[in-house]
Each structure stands twice: as structure tokens, then as C-alpha cells.
Image (cartoon, rainbow, N blue to C red; front, side, top):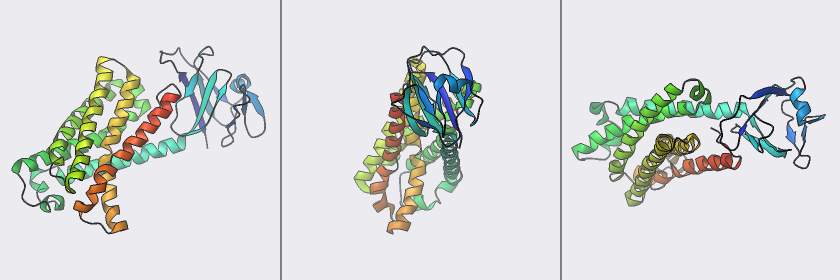
Length: 306
């Protein structure tokens, strides 16, 4: 198990060029002692922070030091293990394997469900033959066209949105990041707008229809605030937070396709008129709660980590 410690200023100012050294800490044995503010302890030897920065690398723990005068620095990680103050520093250790595993799973699910939507609903002619459509009976002609636009746009948003959270891509190819962002924003705008119309015809009655309507409204609202923060205010931190919320709502498509068969297998509920009463809310509320948890935790450390 390897740990990476990347430090960036908590005040949001552009940092000077980092000074990078390796910490001499053994993998899997990293621990912090808040009562000893100037000490990092490995499995056997306590090392002062300054000593650790100049010792030979044992565990390949990379530490990017920005400025010793910065009052608080935080680690850029997803999976947090320990945190403590070390003489004016805040150090956070993260398991990179867990981070990459979660990100990889999200990418696979996003691509799979996005492709599913495009394949099954991408052709207007074939869309009418899908079981979900035929079970609803006779509907206005507009409904079929709106469903097609919703499926295609939402599938695209889901399939490309996860790429935006690749930090290396954002740093090395900002132009690509912007282009994908334009595609994602356009797709969400169409998907959210059409979702408002489709919610009126959703199975599960008024309660389910309210749930899907709330999802569409919040999807569009988080997109608006994410664009406002970057286009108007040029605030990349706030932009990232709102985009995290927006993509968490986009992932409702993944949750919907997981919970619907689970309701049938675990509870024998095969009729979406029954299951959607719960799933219409369950597919997005937990997503937003999880996103908010990570956003607030990262904000408490003074920096955004995605």
C-alpha cells in the first residue's frame, strides 16, 4: 500500500513552484500523533517532518511542499485515513489504490449505462419497441420524441462527464477539458429540460413524478451554478463543487438501472408503478448526499479534492 501526500495552499492563491521530496515512511504503517505536532511516526522510528523530507525514500510517499510559511496545507486525496497538525501543516494521507478503484468503477458504469441508453433508445424507430415504452400504452406523439432526446442527451452526459474529474487531463489538456465540458453542459441542459416533461408521465403516481421532477430541476440548477461560477466568477473551486453535485445527479441513471432489477430480485417488485414510488427518490438523493459529504469534508481541509 502506497500513500501520496500532495500539499497545496489552503488560501486558494496560486502557489509557487513546488519543492518535492520523498517521505521515508513504510507503506501501510503511516500514522500521525496529534499530540506530537512536529512528529511523523513510521512502524519503528519517529521522524521529525524536516528529517522525513530529507531521508531516503522507503515507501515512495511523495510530498510536494509549496511553502513553509503557509499556515495550513492539505493533501489532495479521496480516501482519508489520518489527519493531524504538524507544526503549522495539516497532513492528509490517502490510499491511491482505493481512489483509482472507485474512479475506475465509476467510469465503467458510466460508459456502460450511457452506451445502454444510446443503443436501446438512440434510434427513434427502435425506441417504440422497447418494453419500457410499450408497457405505458398510448401516449402523445411528442412524448416519444422527447424520450429520444432525453435518452440520447443523458447517455452522452453520463458517458463523458466522468472524464472531467481526471486531474491529470485537466492539468495537461485544459482545452480538452473545456470541450468535454461544453458537450456535457449541452447534454445536461437537454436532458434536464426533457426530464421535466417526462416526469409528468412517470410510473409510480404523483409521489414518483415529484421525485423525478425534483431531480430534473436540481440537475439544471447545479449545471447553472457550475457554469456561473466558472464563466462569470472564474472560481474554479466553486465550479468543481457544483460540477461534482451535477454529475452526482447525472449518475441517477446508473442508480435507476441498479435499483430497478434489485427491487425485483430482492423484494419481488417487478411493476415500476410500485417500485418507482421509492426509486424515483432513491436514485438521486443518496448520490447528492455522498457528493455533499465529500465536498464538505474537502472544504473543511481548505481545498477541493476530486
